[in-house]
Image 1 (cartoon, rainbow, N blue to C red):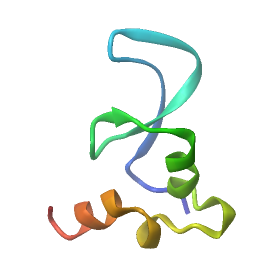
Image 2 (image 1 turned 90 degrees about the vertical axis):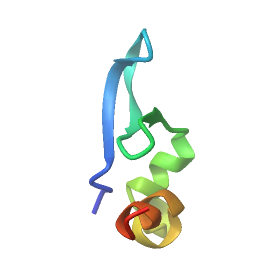
Image 3 (image 1 turned 180 degrees about the horizontal axis):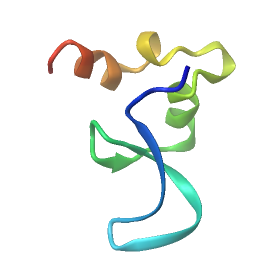
Image 4 (image 1 turned 30 degrees about the vertical axis):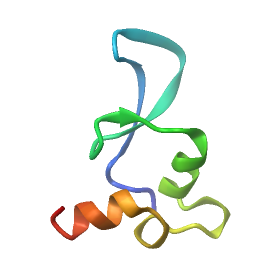
Length: 61
């Protein structure tokens, strides 16, 4: 299951992109491709277990 806090956007921060980029709605920032892999549970990574941003958001801060 993908992280509910991950979106793909083609523009942001005053720029437009040719391809959509991963955006974390918790940090209000674009994330690196490896972080998006965690968000999307790729390579046996689980966002709820391996992402400190997701864990912190789930615990209320």
